Amino acid sequence: MVVWEVPEPVPSCGHAFKYRLAYVVDGTCALRFDNEAGKGDHVHKGNEERPVRFSSIRALLERFWSEVDSMRGEGRHEGADD
Image (cartoon, rainbow, N blue to C red; front, top):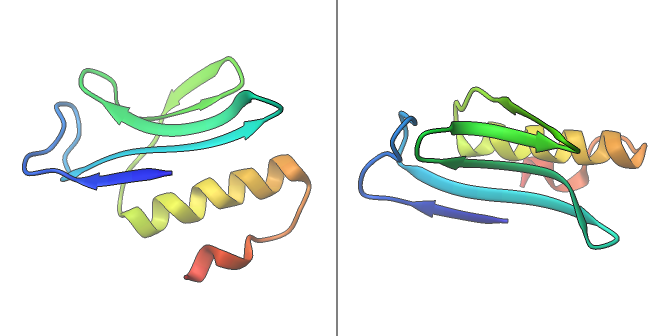
């Protein structure tokens, strides 16, 4: 997980954060939320890539952990409220 507050929004994003949240299983990236110029906020899950709506870092982290827990077959992540 890496989150930076940037002085100006990344092109295609309306917020002041650059981020990369990755869940790696056996050396393979199974899930990644990130944003980049030209693509905006999006998620990679397996071979699929789709846009995501960014509302806050907290909401993004909660969604990331929820998806990780779902992939693991677990309940809600204990650190989601931290």
